[in-house]
Length: 383
Image (cartoon, rainbow, N blue to C red):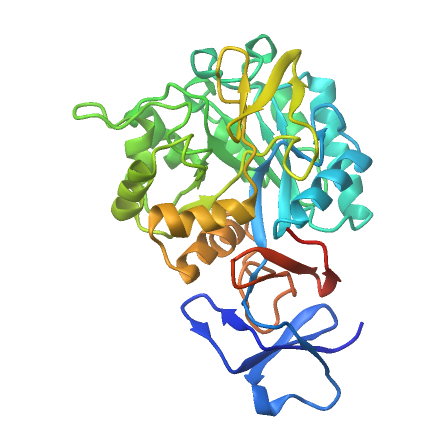
């Protein structure tokens, strides 16, 4: 692989932006950051023409993209199409996310992601199994007829030894004692969502090994004066992580700003909860037999229920800056570094640092994606 020097661009580091410096890539990894006058002669210069160079975005909740729904295509071809669609929007790492489904579909999806990783499909980091161990009272767009209680058989299914990261979303109040610990001990990251767990139940789950919260505020108990709820427990806890869907619809921007002010940026991850229309051409699709349409930029069922989103990570990143008032550096941490740490991949990706994999996104002056690199391999397809 050619040794590259990426020039004429502002580098977004974990704590600051720097100009008049060059990013060196060699053997698919970040070799160094040097002054513009110190480019080694062996490196081929690539003038990016301005803009910003950031760590590639990492999305832990991707239901579909490129007109493909993971539940409908739990195979390598479907995963490849979804990853390629999201790469156009700066996502260089993602977890294909399976919405509550039958056990055989879950097994197929886990096997397919394992195969996709083995075949080096760009950007695939693992799988997110969202359900079916959820609470029917907070089912959202999920098919509650698929919901089941988690038991030993389910734990065996979810902990099958494969490659990549495994993230599972469940309702902790319905999980028997020890279930979260059993998943955690076998390398599965456990998040809470679609749940009626109260504050005390959530705190107990955190003590057992719960590490995250899927789309904070949505489909969970809220923070009120006498009942802090799951939201209160999530914001109070300093060791866990939470996904934020920053589309201006799922959660009011002021609510998100308050959460960030209370908790700080360290636990916050931008997620899309994206559906097939992202990077695709269709404006409607079917989910578990339900007709879903894109209405004013959102995915909704016939009764108006939100069904994931039509949000890309590039737009989520811009929204974080414009709606939440965070800086470019802070938005980058929310879109990349925090998710990498949550997934246990921060020694490999998520920030611009020598030695890490060259997973990068180039934004132009309008903050639109121009090109991406995954492991140093360039794609010129952008927005």
